[in-house]
Image 1 (cartoon, rainbow, N blue to C red):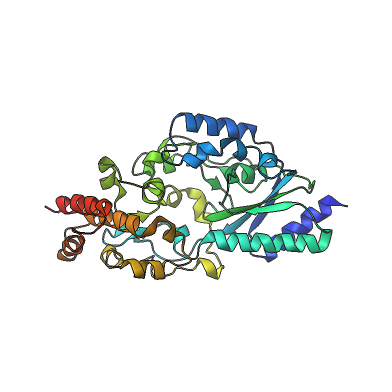
Image 2: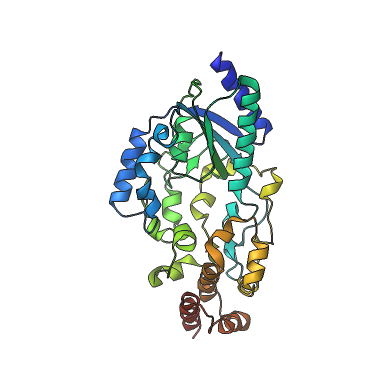
Length: 343
């Protein structure tokens, strides 16, 4: 089989399926494994025990999926046009990637369709698709595949699309010719480091997740450290600050993917209106959203912090008082803190 020609067809099919960039990488992740080991050794993964539990599998694709020779890495853009709520402390700031449909489902479906096309063309082959759903070093693999380079904030950057995109992978036993890695273009810029509200980016390419607002509002199960709460501002699910200031994101273009269109007005919703949702309303509105994975209790926890950092309007104080006797001790604690901020 002419695997170079097959690789070219795979890239064409992937773009027909809605991916904006496709690359092919080999499975040598030794350098990335060393960085991961150092990061875990510092304890910067916080409560994300799965990062340590699957450490070896992350850097050894052939151990995770026996027979893997190559990884097909795919990029799908998600940026949506519109104003950002960050400057209005009464609005809830939700990370851009989470305002539409759950990207896991979208990417997995498209990757499976890509594999179906490959099967129809080349016959049965070994593969497994991933979309941020298993111990996969997606940034390292995408960098090896030439899709972009790791920025100083640790996310992948592309000269054409900045960083507003998702990554998905196909582990395969097809001996496709690998692409050349992308060169780095961050230079002396440090805007992503300087802007971080909690100083979670300790140095270029070194992120202490325990201080990252995305970790605090999504991954952390329990109480948010009191000293970090004022720094979170109105960010109730994730944080985009390090991406928003990146000069490369000036080249990003809005996605044409309808699944990533904003739902439930999450680009302009107020903290008060979201805090008023019942558990049933949360489940109904967040069906098919990545936000649903944190659950209603942590959703209220995050909103209480945002309300504690908001101006002390009568509406803000009344919303907090209405939840002061909530059945959840976690919610009550954060509501009490928020009320104390308003005297």
